[in-house]
Length: 364
Image 1 (cartoon, rainbow, N blue to C red):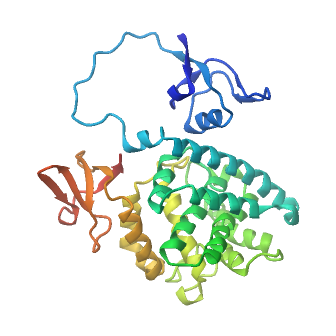
Image 2: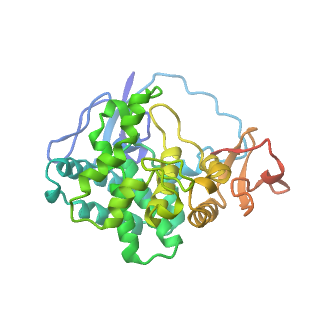
Image 3: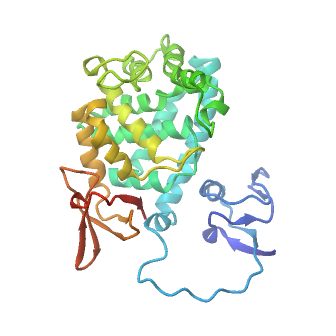
């Protein structure tokens, strides 16, 4: 392989680094022969790395592909190149790193764990986005982490912040809701990582252990000086309004309002994120699940506000349908949020509410 020097602006996921990369303090940032990821590139930008060497294949230049009449870069590819995304990813990475340190300290000495600083950083992340639409754009563009505790909890907290805005909550209540999202899975710190990230189905005993994270988490915080709503969310975020949840099989009237909000954010974030054992689902597949099952499991008032706003945030987004056709979302059907109108070209539209065999397969 040849070796080529590139600038940081040319860095892209999949490139192979040909040298150890150090920051100005001589700390190793990216080891030699690492395959670049969005996270690694964001780390280099954060440390002001201007350029570095990569390995390149000794191949003959391929003939140019025939134009398809559309941009080769997807919307999310372009978004990852913007200064806003670069700043957001660097801030997100540093917040997750601080979370790991602070949460580890929480296990041994809760009184010294400054989780309020993470809540402040989460608020700053939300405020760095111009709108709720951009929060979800950045959420889906930045999927470097396959993490069931830290990055997941941070994303859930961000979604909770946006839900609080959509529901018209005061800033004081939104601040508490952010902490509910940050704390909700803290019990998973007590569960072995090899079980949380197991790529094959859990045994009944392992499943019982994982489901026990809500009680483990509650026991970690029950004697701490925390808002009672945070404690309730830790215990109740897997409860469902029809009584089918756990650990107490509570029904709607016994589940705290904030736990109902966290539950929706938790499910949406988890299902749209990649995991060791599966790819992340398309948001519209998750919305379809909410429509078919959600009204029994989740509070309809909270869920309907979420679905209406989340689908509106995808207006104008290009998508690929299950038959391979691509187009742009131009109209949201309020009677079937997961089945919007798609503009294929200037004269062709597909109304998914009238095409039961077609679904949105991916956002592009």
